Length: 215
Image (cartoon, rainbow, N blue to C red):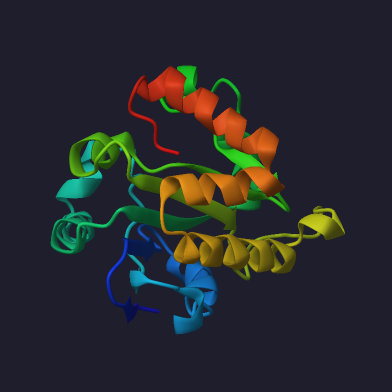
């Protein structure tokens, strides 16, 4: 399940994608990360790392970054100094309402994730690293889709929200992120397809980070 790939297209932005950062999420994220090819990166570098399974500890818990894996992720960030940092995650289908709850900030202190479509969600990475390891203009995103695990029950889902369709979109978004050279470039691409979601992300950013937007 552990996977590493470095795509180097010379001068340009540095991107770091780290999937499966806790629990068994890497069993799902690796399906998308392995589909990103050299041709998806136009210039700059892309470092892809998919983690082995670990005990689940939320990245919203500051203690996560004191675990061996948490420390390693911080080391990757320090080493590569990415301008685009993306954490592909997955979630159990029964967690959807909790992750997108409009009261999430009051409940646990961070804004809700935003659905693009097909149950693919987007938001900021943990504030524990967003404001301490990155510059204001850096792109730092969490991307979520339903986990592709045998024990999950998908019988109650609408056909349009089945994980296979989520994975297709999830991979497409990751490839868009891999190809984008600046935050302005990324926002332009995303706004064309998801204008309401991008504006909602800006709204949440202003409310949570003030002048330190994560999107």
